[in-house]
Image (tube, rainbow, N blue to C red; front, side, top):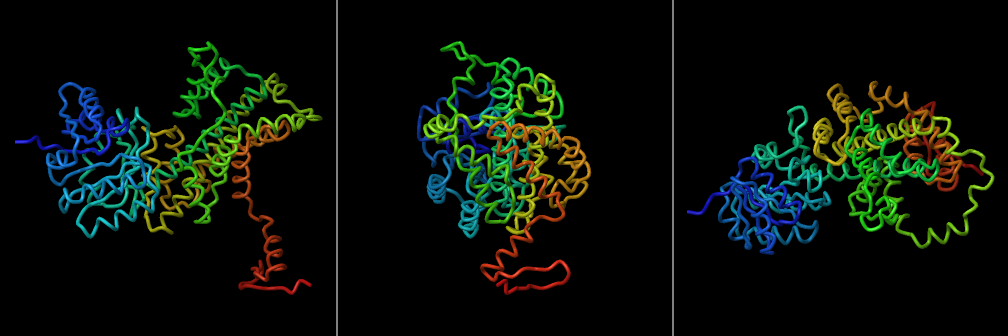
Length: 475
Protein backbone atom coordinates (compact mmCIF):
# COMPACT_ATOMS: atom_id res chain seq x y z
CA UNK A 1 0.00 0.00 0.00
CA UNK A 2 1.29 3.47 -0.90
CA UNK A 3 2.63 5.66 1.89
CA UNK A 4 0.01 8.23 3.00
CA UNK A 5 1.76 11.60 2.94
CA UNK A 6 0.77 14.56 5.11
CA UNK A 7 1.71 17.46 2.87
CA UNK A 8 2.18 17.95 -0.86
CA UNK A 9 4.05 20.63 -2.78
CA UNK A 10 3.59 21.65 -6.41
CA UNK A 11 6.84 23.22 -7.59
CA UNK A 12 10.25 22.19 -6.26
CA UNK A 13 12.19 25.33 -6.98
CA UNK A 14 14.34 26.69 -4.17
CA UNK A 15 11.43 27.93 -2.03
CA UNK A 16 9.17 24.94 -2.63
CA UNK A 17 11.92 22.40 -1.99
CA UNK A 18 13.15 24.12 1.16
CA UNK A 19 9.70 24.51 2.67
CA UNK A 20 8.92 20.86 2.00
CA UNK A 21 12.21 19.72 3.53
CA UNK A 22 11.33 21.88 6.56
CA UNK A 23 7.97 20.10 6.79
CA UNK A 24 9.72 16.71 6.70
CA UNK A 25 12.23 17.78 9.36
CA UNK A 26 9.32 18.30 11.76
CA UNK A 27 8.05 14.76 11.50
CA UNK A 28 5.52 15.08 8.67
CA UNK A 29 5.60 12.90 5.58
CA UNK A 30 6.28 15.16 2.60
CA UNK A 31 5.71 14.59 -1.11
CA UNK A 32 6.59 17.02 -3.88
CA UNK A 33 5.74 17.29 -7.56
CA UNK A 34 7.82 18.86 -10.30
CA UNK A 35 7.88 18.15 -14.01
CA UNK A 36 11.68 18.25 -13.90
CA UNK A 37 13.03 14.87 -12.70
CA UNK A 38 16.32 16.53 -11.75
CA UNK A 39 14.50 18.71 -9.22
CA UNK A 40 12.64 15.79 -7.69
CA UNK A 41 15.86 13.81 -7.43
CA UNK A 42 17.68 16.76 -5.85
CA UNK A 43 14.82 17.17 -3.39
CA UNK A 44 15.12 13.57 -2.22
CA UNK A 45 18.92 13.81 -1.96
CA UNK A 46 18.69 16.97 0.18
CA UNK A 47 16.40 15.36 2.76
CA UNK A 48 17.61 14.96 6.33
CA UNK A 49 18.41 11.35 7.22
CA UNK A 50 15.44 9.61 8.79
CA UNK A 51 12.78 11.92 7.32
CA UNK A 52 10.08 10.69 4.95
CA UNK A 53 10.13 12.48 1.59
CA UNK A 54 9.25 11.60 -1.97
CA UNK A 55 9.56 13.39 -5.30
CA UNK A 56 7.18 12.57 -8.17
CA UNK A 57 6.78 13.82 -11.73
CA UNK A 58 3.01 13.66 -12.17
CA UNK A 59 0.27 15.35 -10.17
CA UNK A 60 -1.69 12.10 -10.17
CA UNK A 61 1.11 10.33 -8.29
CA UNK A 62 1.25 13.05 -5.67
CA UNK A 63 -2.48 13.50 -5.10
CA UNK A 64 -3.14 9.74 -4.91
CA UNK A 65 -0.61 9.38 -2.09
CA UNK A 66 -1.82 12.21 0.13
CA UNK A 67 -3.86 11.56 3.26
CA UNK A 68 -7.27 13.27 3.36
CA UNK A 69 -8.11 16.03 3.66
CA UNK A 70 -5.30 16.59 1.21
CA UNK A 71 -3.04 19.56 1.93
CA UNK A 72 -1.45 20.80 -1.29
CA UNK A 73 0.70 23.92 -1.52
CA UNK A 74 1.42 25.62 -4.84
CA UNK A 75 4.75 27.46 -5.17
CA UNK A 76 5.03 28.45 -8.82
CA UNK A 77 5.31 31.92 -10.42
CA UNK A 78 2.31 34.11 -9.62
CA UNK A 79 -0.45 34.67 -12.16
CA UNK A 80 -1.58 32.22 -14.85
CA UNK A 81 0.73 29.38 -13.71
CA UNK A 82 -1.21 29.21 -10.42
CA UNK A 83 -4.53 29.04 -12.28
CA UNK A 84 -3.15 26.33 -14.55
CA UNK A 85 -2.08 24.22 -11.56
CA UNK A 86 -5.48 24.63 -9.91
CA UNK A 87 -7.25 23.49 -13.08
CA UNK A 88 -4.93 20.45 -13.28
CA UNK A 89 -5.66 19.58 -9.64
CA UNK A 90 -9.45 19.89 -9.79
CA UNK A 91 -10.11 16.49 -11.44
CA UNK A 92 -7.85 14.84 -8.87
CA UNK A 93 -9.00 16.32 -5.54
CA UNK A 94 -12.15 15.82 -3.50
CA UNK A 95 -14.47 18.01 -1.46
CA UNK A 96 -12.81 19.05 1.76
CA UNK A 97 -9.29 19.06 0.32
CA UNK A 98 -7.12 22.14 0.82
CA UNK A 99 -5.22 24.05 -1.87
CA UNK A 100 -2.69 26.64 -0.72
CA UNK A 101 -1.10 29.41 -2.77
CA UNK A 102 2.21 30.28 -1.12
CA UNK A 103 3.49 32.74 -3.74
CA UNK A 104 3.57 36.53 -3.93
CA UNK A 105 0.10 36.76 -5.42
CA UNK A 106 -1.92 39.91 -6.13
CA UNK A 107 -4.65 39.87 -3.52
CA UNK A 108 -7.62 40.14 -5.93
CA UNK A 109 -6.41 36.97 -7.67
CA UNK A 110 -6.57 35.20 -4.31
CA UNK A 111 -10.13 36.43 -3.77
CA UNK A 112 -11.14 35.25 -7.25
CA UNK A 113 -9.70 31.78 -6.69
CA UNK A 114 -11.34 31.49 -3.28
CA UNK A 115 -14.73 32.37 -4.79
CA UNK A 116 -14.17 29.96 -7.66
CA UNK A 117 -13.22 26.98 -5.47
CA UNK A 118 -15.60 27.45 -2.53
CA UNK A 119 -18.74 26.22 -4.40
CA UNK A 120 -16.77 23.12 -5.42
CA UNK A 121 -16.13 22.31 -1.75
CA UNK A 122 -12.39 22.96 -2.03
CA UNK A 123 -10.78 24.99 0.76
CA UNK A 124 -8.47 27.61 -0.77
CA UNK A 125 -6.11 29.71 1.31
CA UNK A 126 -3.46 32.28 0.42
CA UNK A 127 -0.34 32.33 2.57
CA UNK A 128 2.34 35.00 2.43
CA UNK A 129 5.76 33.48 3.10
CA UNK A 130 8.79 35.59 4.04
CA UNK A 131 12.37 34.78 4.86
CA UNK A 132 13.90 33.78 1.55
CA UNK A 133 15.40 30.38 0.91
CA UNK A 134 17.07 30.12 4.33
CA UNK A 135 13.85 31.06 6.12
CA UNK A 136 11.89 28.51 4.11
CA UNK A 137 14.36 25.79 5.08
CA UNK A 138 14.77 26.56 8.77
CA UNK A 139 11.86 28.74 9.85
CA UNK A 140 9.93 31.32 7.81
CA UNK A 141 7.39 33.94 8.82
CA UNK A 142 4.01 32.98 7.37
CA UNK A 143 0.82 34.98 6.89
CA UNK A 144 -2.23 32.78 6.16
CA UNK A 145 -5.59 34.40 5.53
CA UNK A 146 -9.03 33.52 4.25
CA UNK A 147 -10.54 30.07 4.71
CA UNK A 148 -10.60 29.54 8.49
CA UNK A 149 -11.27 25.81 8.11
CA UNK A 150 -8.12 25.45 6.02
CA UNK A 151 -6.13 27.37 8.64
CA UNK A 152 -7.28 25.02 11.41
CA UNK A 153 -6.24 21.98 9.36
CA UNK A 154 -2.87 23.51 8.47
CA UNK A 155 -2.07 25.00 11.88
CA UNK A 156 -0.15 21.99 13.32
CA UNK A 157 2.20 21.86 10.33
CA UNK A 158 2.63 25.61 9.89
CA UNK A 159 3.27 26.23 13.59
CA UNK A 160 5.90 23.47 13.57
CA UNK A 161 7.88 24.80 10.61
CA UNK A 162 7.63 28.54 11.39
CA UNK A 163 10.37 30.60 12.99
CA UNK A 164 9.98 30.94 16.78
CA UNK A 165 10.33 34.05 18.96
CA UNK A 166 10.07 33.62 22.72
CA UNK A 167 8.65 30.16 21.99
CA UNK A 168 5.84 31.59 19.83
CA UNK A 169 5.60 30.46 16.18
CA UNK A 170 5.80 33.26 13.61
CA UNK A 171 2.57 32.26 11.91
CA UNK A 172 -1.01 33.20 12.72
CA UNK A 173 -4.34 33.91 11.06
CA UNK A 174 -4.36 37.24 9.19
CA UNK A 175 -8.08 37.67 8.52
CA UNK A 176 -10.77 37.22 5.88
CA UNK A 177 -10.54 36.73 2.14
CA UNK A 178 -7.14 37.58 0.71
CA UNK A 179 -5.80 39.00 3.98
CA UNK A 180 -2.75 36.72 3.99
CA UNK A 181 -1.46 37.90 0.63
CA UNK A 182 -2.45 41.50 1.40
CA UNK A 183 -0.43 41.49 4.63
CA UNK A 184 2.54 39.97 2.79
CA UNK A 185 2.28 42.64 0.09
CA UNK A 186 2.41 45.42 2.71
CA UNK A 187 5.29 43.59 4.41
CA UNK A 188 7.17 43.81 1.11
CA UNK A 189 6.32 47.51 0.76
CA UNK A 190 7.83 48.16 4.20
CA UNK A 191 10.84 46.10 3.11
CA UNK A 192 11.27 48.34 0.05
CA UNK A 193 11.18 51.44 2.26
CA UNK A 194 13.69 50.20 4.84
CA UNK A 195 16.14 49.05 2.17
CA UNK A 196 15.97 52.45 0.44
CA UNK A 197 16.47 54.27 3.74
CA UNK A 198 19.59 52.21 4.46
CA UNK A 199 20.90 52.98 0.97
CA UNK A 200 20.42 56.72 1.48
CA UNK A 201 22.26 56.67 4.80
CA UNK A 202 25.03 54.65 3.13
CA UNK A 203 25.29 57.24 0.36
CA UNK A 204 25.62 60.14 2.80
CA UNK A 205 28.27 58.35 4.86
CA UNK A 206 30.23 56.83 1.96
CA UNK A 207 30.10 59.39 -0.80
CA UNK A 208 29.44 62.42 1.37
CA UNK A 209 31.52 61.85 4.48
CA UNK A 210 34.14 59.57 2.95
CA UNK A 211 33.72 56.56 5.23
CA UNK A 212 35.30 53.45 3.72
CA UNK A 213 33.72 50.01 3.65
CA UNK A 214 35.63 48.75 6.68
CA UNK A 215 34.38 51.72 8.70
CA UNK A 216 30.84 51.18 7.44
CA UNK A 217 31.05 47.52 8.42
CA UNK A 218 32.04 48.49 11.95
CA UNK A 219 29.40 51.20 12.16
CA UNK A 220 26.49 49.04 10.99
CA UNK A 221 27.68 46.17 13.17
CA UNK A 222 27.57 48.45 16.20
CA UNK A 223 24.12 49.74 15.20
CA UNK A 224 22.93 46.15 15.06
CA UNK A 225 23.82 45.74 18.72
CA UNK A 226 21.36 48.42 19.85
CA UNK A 227 17.92 49.80 18.95
CA UNK A 228 18.47 49.29 15.19
CA UNK A 229 19.01 45.53 15.63
CA UNK A 230 17.33 43.88 12.66
CA UNK A 231 17.93 41.47 9.81
CA UNK A 232 18.45 44.18 7.19
CA UNK A 233 21.00 46.08 9.29
CA UNK A 234 22.79 42.80 10.03
CA UNK A 235 23.14 41.76 6.39
CA UNK A 236 24.16 45.31 5.40
CA UNK A 237 27.08 45.11 7.84
CA UNK A 238 28.06 41.76 6.29
CA UNK A 239 27.88 43.16 2.76
CA UNK A 240 30.45 45.86 3.53
CA UNK A 241 33.03 43.22 4.52
CA UNK A 242 32.66 41.01 1.45
CA UNK A 243 35.53 41.04 -1.07
CA UNK A 244 35.14 40.37 -4.79
CA UNK A 245 37.14 37.19 -5.63
CA UNK A 246 37.80 38.43 -9.18
CA UNK A 247 39.25 41.87 -8.43
CA UNK A 248 40.03 41.83 -4.71
CA UNK A 249 37.94 45.00 -4.31
CA UNK A 250 34.99 45.24 -1.99
CA UNK A 251 32.14 43.52 -3.80
CA UNK A 252 29.60 46.25 -3.04
CA UNK A 253 31.73 48.70 -5.07
CA UNK A 254 31.66 46.37 -8.08
CA UNK A 255 27.86 46.11 -8.24
CA UNK A 256 25.95 48.25 -10.75
CA UNK A 257 23.64 50.84 -9.19
CA UNK A 258 20.45 49.62 -10.89
CA UNK A 259 17.70 47.87 -8.94
CA UNK A 260 14.69 45.96 -10.19
CA UNK A 261 11.28 45.33 -8.69
CA UNK A 262 9.19 42.16 -8.64
CA UNK A 263 5.96 44.12 -8.26
CA UNK A 264 4.89 43.87 -4.63
CA UNK A 265 6.27 47.29 -3.72
CA UNK A 266 4.53 48.83 -6.72
CA UNK A 267 1.28 47.05 -5.81
CA UNK A 268 1.50 48.46 -2.28
CA UNK A 269 1.77 52.01 -3.62
CA UNK A 270 -0.96 51.56 -6.22
CA UNK A 271 -3.45 50.08 -3.78
CA UNK A 272 -2.65 52.67 -1.11
CA UNK A 273 -3.45 55.39 -3.66
CA UNK A 274 -6.76 53.68 -4.47
CA UNK A 275 -7.57 53.41 -0.76
CA UNK A 276 -6.56 57.01 0.01
CA UNK A 277 -3.82 55.94 2.42
CA UNK A 278 -0.57 57.95 2.67
CA UNK A 279 2.58 55.79 2.45
CA UNK A 280 5.08 58.30 1.00
CA UNK A 281 8.25 56.53 2.19
CA UNK A 282 7.20 53.32 0.45
CA UNK A 283 6.15 55.31 -2.65
CA UNK A 284 9.57 56.95 -2.83
CA UNK A 285 11.34 53.60 -2.46
CA UNK A 286 9.52 52.38 -5.58
CA UNK A 287 10.29 55.64 -7.39
CA UNK A 288 14.01 55.40 -6.58
CA UNK A 289 14.18 51.92 -8.09
CA UNK A 290 12.56 53.32 -11.23
CA UNK A 291 15.06 56.20 -11.32
CA UNK A 292 17.97 53.81 -10.78
CA UNK A 293 17.01 52.01 -13.98
CA UNK A 294 17.82 55.18 -15.98
CA UNK A 295 21.56 54.57 -15.61
CA UNK A 296 22.75 55.94 -18.96
CA UNK A 297 20.56 59.04 -18.66
CA UNK A 298 21.76 59.64 -15.10
CA UNK A 299 25.41 59.45 -16.17
CA UNK A 300 24.77 61.99 -18.94
CA UNK A 301 22.80 64.30 -16.64
CA UNK A 302 25.58 64.09 -14.06
CA UNK A 303 27.98 65.55 -16.63
CA UNK A 304 25.61 68.43 -17.42
CA UNK A 305 24.62 69.20 -13.83
CA UNK A 306 27.90 68.30 -12.14
CA UNK A 307 28.20 71.72 -10.53
CA UNK A 308 24.86 71.48 -8.68
CA UNK A 309 26.74 71.68 -5.38
CA UNK A 310 28.64 74.83 -6.34
CA UNK A 311 28.44 77.49 -3.67
CA UNK A 312 27.29 75.18 -0.89
CA UNK A 313 29.39 75.64 2.22
CA UNK A 314 27.86 72.92 4.37
CA UNK A 315 29.69 69.60 4.14
CA UNK A 316 28.85 66.18 5.66
CA UNK A 317 32.55 65.34 5.98
CA UNK A 318 33.06 68.35 8.24
CA UNK A 319 30.18 67.19 10.42
CA UNK A 320 31.70 63.72 10.59
CA UNK A 321 34.97 65.17 11.84
CA UNK A 322 33.01 66.94 14.54
CA UNK A 323 31.64 63.55 15.54
CA UNK A 324 27.98 64.29 14.96
CA UNK A 325 27.02 62.91 11.53
CA UNK A 326 27.36 59.18 12.26
CA UNK A 327 25.22 59.46 15.38
CA UNK A 328 22.70 61.63 13.55
CA UNK A 329 22.52 59.03 10.77
CA UNK A 330 21.77 56.35 13.35
CA UNK A 331 18.94 58.40 14.86
CA UNK A 332 17.63 59.44 11.45
CA UNK A 333 17.58 55.86 10.18
CA UNK A 334 15.88 54.63 13.33
CA UNK A 335 13.16 57.29 13.09
CA UNK A 336 12.58 56.82 9.37
CA UNK A 337 12.33 53.03 9.77
CA UNK A 338 9.65 53.58 12.41
CA UNK A 339 7.80 55.77 9.90
CA UNK A 340 7.96 52.96 7.32
CA UNK A 341 6.28 50.51 9.69
CA UNK A 342 3.78 53.19 10.79
CA UNK A 343 2.71 53.80 7.19
CA UNK A 344 2.38 50.11 6.37
CA UNK A 345 0.39 49.34 9.52
CA UNK A 346 -1.92 52.31 8.85
CA UNK A 347 -2.59 50.80 5.43
CA UNK A 348 -3.44 47.44 7.02
CA UNK A 349 -5.75 49.18 9.49
CA UNK A 350 -7.67 50.77 6.60
CA UNK A 351 -7.77 47.53 4.58
CA UNK A 352 -9.07 45.67 7.62
CA UNK A 353 -12.29 47.68 7.58
CA UNK A 354 -12.69 48.99 4.03
CA UNK A 355 -11.88 45.65 2.36
CA UNK A 356 -13.64 43.70 5.14
CA UNK A 357 -10.54 41.65 5.91
CA UNK A 358 -10.78 42.02 9.71
CA UNK A 359 -7.01 41.84 10.08
CA UNK A 360 -5.83 41.32 13.68
CA UNK A 361 -2.99 43.84 13.48
CA UNK A 362 -1.22 42.40 16.51
CA UNK A 363 -0.91 39.11 14.61
CA UNK A 364 0.83 40.82 11.70
CA UNK A 365 3.56 42.40 13.82
CA UNK A 366 3.79 39.25 15.93
CA UNK A 367 4.62 36.98 13.00
CA UNK A 368 7.10 39.52 11.59
CA UNK A 369 9.26 39.34 14.73
CA UNK A 370 11.16 36.31 13.40
CA UNK A 371 11.89 34.55 10.13
CA UNK A 372 11.04 37.43 7.81
CA UNK A 373 13.10 40.07 6.02
CA UNK A 374 11.76 43.00 8.09
CA UNK A 375 12.25 41.36 11.47
CA UNK A 376 13.47 43.90 14.00
CA UNK A 377 13.52 44.57 17.72
CA UNK A 378 11.08 47.40 16.97
CA UNK A 379 8.34 44.86 16.32
CA UNK A 380 8.14 44.03 20.03
CA UNK A 381 7.29 47.69 20.66
CA UNK A 382 4.63 47.65 17.95
CA UNK A 383 3.23 44.39 19.31
CA UNK A 384 2.88 46.00 22.73
CA UNK A 385 1.08 48.98 21.20
CA UNK A 386 -1.52 46.75 19.56
CA UNK A 387 -2.00 44.72 22.73
CA UNK A 388 -2.73 47.98 24.56
CA UNK A 389 -5.07 49.23 21.84
CA UNK A 390 -5.96 46.71 19.11
CA UNK A 391 -7.95 49.30 17.12
CA UNK A 392 -5.38 52.11 17.12
CA UNK A 393 -5.52 53.61 13.59
CA UNK A 394 -1.92 54.84 13.56
CA UNK A 395 1.03 53.84 15.72
CA UNK A 396 2.06 57.48 16.14
CA UNK A 397 -0.95 57.77 18.47
CA UNK A 398 0.69 55.35 20.90
CA UNK A 399 2.52 57.15 23.72
CA UNK A 400 5.47 54.74 23.77
CA UNK A 401 6.05 55.09 20.03
CA UNK A 402 5.57 58.83 20.20
CA UNK A 403 8.36 59.07 22.78
CA UNK A 404 10.76 57.02 20.60
CA UNK A 405 10.10 59.32 17.65
CA UNK A 406 10.30 62.63 19.49
CA UNK A 407 13.59 61.54 21.04
CA UNK A 408 15.12 61.01 17.60
CA UNK A 409 13.27 63.29 15.17
CA UNK A 410 15.86 66.08 15.37
CA UNK A 411 18.53 63.70 14.06
CA UNK A 412 16.32 63.01 11.04
CA UNK A 413 15.86 66.77 10.52
CA UNK A 414 19.62 67.38 10.58
CA UNK A 415 20.40 64.52 8.18
CA UNK A 416 17.67 65.55 5.76
CA UNK A 417 18.98 69.12 5.88
CA UNK A 418 22.53 67.98 5.11
CA UNK A 419 21.31 65.77 2.25
CA UNK A 420 19.34 68.65 0.72
CA UNK A 421 22.16 71.16 1.12
CA UNK A 422 24.71 68.83 -0.45
CA UNK A 423 22.71 67.40 -3.32
CA UNK A 424 22.23 63.85 -2.07
CA UNK A 425 19.03 62.12 -3.26
CA UNK A 426 17.45 61.14 0.05
CA UNK A 427 13.80 61.05 -0.91
CA UNK A 428 12.82 58.24 1.45
CA UNK A 429 14.36 60.03 4.46
CA UNK A 430 12.72 63.29 3.36
CA UNK A 431 9.32 61.67 2.87
CA UNK A 432 9.53 59.96 6.25
CA UNK A 433 10.05 63.37 7.83
CA UNK A 434 7.27 64.95 5.77
CA UNK A 435 4.86 62.20 6.78
CA UNK A 436 5.66 62.75 10.43
CA UNK A 437 5.35 66.53 10.21
CA UNK A 438 2.07 66.35 8.27
CA UNK A 439 0.47 63.72 10.49
CA UNK A 440 1.41 65.59 13.67
CA UNK A 441 0.28 69.04 12.41
CA UNK A 442 -3.19 70.07 13.59
CA UNK A 443 -3.76 72.51 10.73
CA UNK A 444 -2.35 71.97 7.24
CA UNK A 445 -2.48 74.58 4.44
CA UNK A 446 -5.01 72.55 2.45
CA UNK A 447 -7.69 75.12 3.25
CA UNK A 448 -6.09 77.16 0.46
CA UNK A 449 -6.22 74.16 -1.87
CA UNK A 450 -9.95 73.80 -1.19
CA UNK A 451 -10.41 77.47 -1.99
CA UNK A 452 -8.52 76.99 -5.27
CA UNK A 453 -10.68 74.00 -6.23
CA UNK A 454 -13.85 75.94 -5.49
CA UNK A 455 -12.51 78.96 -7.43
CA UNK A 456 -11.82 77.10 -10.70
CA UNK A 457 -14.24 74.20 -10.47
CA UNK A 458 -17.02 75.05 -8.00
CA UNK A 459 -16.06 71.92 -6.03
CA UNK A 460 -17.32 73.48 -2.75
CA UNK A 461 -15.59 73.52 0.61
CA UNK A 462 -16.35 72.98 4.29
CA UNK A 463 -16.04 75.70 6.92
CA UNK A 464 -14.36 75.71 10.33
CA UNK A 465 -17.28 77.42 12.08
CA UNK A 466 -20.36 75.50 10.87
CA UNK A 467 -21.44 72.27 9.18
CA UNK A 468 -22.26 71.86 5.50
CA UNK A 469 -20.82 72.37 2.00
CA UNK A 470 -20.31 75.88 0.65
CA UNK A 471 -19.50 77.56 -2.65
CA UNK A 472 -18.32 81.11 -3.26
CA UNK A 473 -18.56 83.16 -6.46
CA UNK A 474 -14.89 84.20 -6.43
CA UNK A 475 -15.05 86.71 -9.33
